Amino acid sequence: MTDARSAAWDIYSQSKPLRRRTNARGEVTWFNWSQYPDHGPGADVLKLKPGDRALDLGCGSGGNAAHLAALGMKSVGIDLSARQLDKARERWPDVDGMDLHQADALTYLGDTCPTFDAVYSVFGAAWFTDPVVLLPLVHARLKTGGVFAFSQRPPVEGCYGCQASYIPRGPDEDPAVVRRWDHEPDAWVLILHEHGFVDVSASVLAPPPGKRRTGTLLVRAVRRG
Ligand SMILES: C[S@@+](CC[C@H](N)C(=O)[O-])C[C@H]1O[C@@H](n2cnc3c(N)ncnc32)[C@H](O)[C@@H]1O
Image 1 (cartoon, helix red, strand yellow):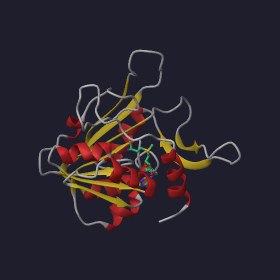
Image 2: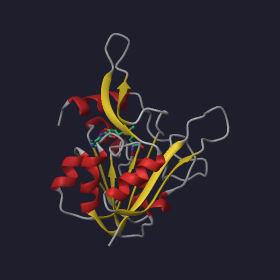
Image 3: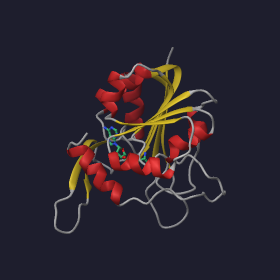
Image 4: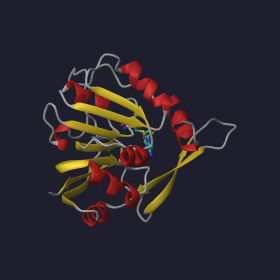
């Protein structure tokens, strides 16, 4: 699969190092919702138990999907970028219970039959896909009571809806452009309710102590019965 978006994410992949061997607690796998290391909540947001099925939309180099597999979940990661998936396979060669596929989130959700106990996306496809198109598909693929959760940067004040993200290609080339969808937490709550989700929460986690000012928007919702 090579289209403008997967090519853009292949470029992005070149600038990103593989996940560290261990985190600050010495763990070899872990879940990270935030853009900061060793920060924020973990996999418990998804309320999964061993044997449950989880889908990562835009899994990138696979650290979160590998963690769920290590906890005993059936962990599926999909990503547009072949390079990102190569990195995931290089970084996590021996993880049982993790399946990776190169696919667009909308295509995968539309075509695939299985249902999931949780669908999640960490700065991933849920940020880079129109929620009006994505949410009905996520809802259809979640089991009753299943959790949909995603994280991304909070919006810049006044910049809502579809926005442009620029991925640098180098000093002599124009950047690649991908679209993302930004909303304030209250707006996400309304949007998710409109699409049939319940128990919706959306908030901005504060950044870790230090100079950084940008927090992490974390949104969580449940598929009603
Ligand atoms: C900023 S990276 C985050 C990767 C990973 N979730 C992480 O936390 O490191 C965004 C990822 O989403 C993937 N992506 C973006 N749009 C997508 C889509 N429509 N379908 C599948 N993957 C997508 C990109 O290829 C990229 O790997």
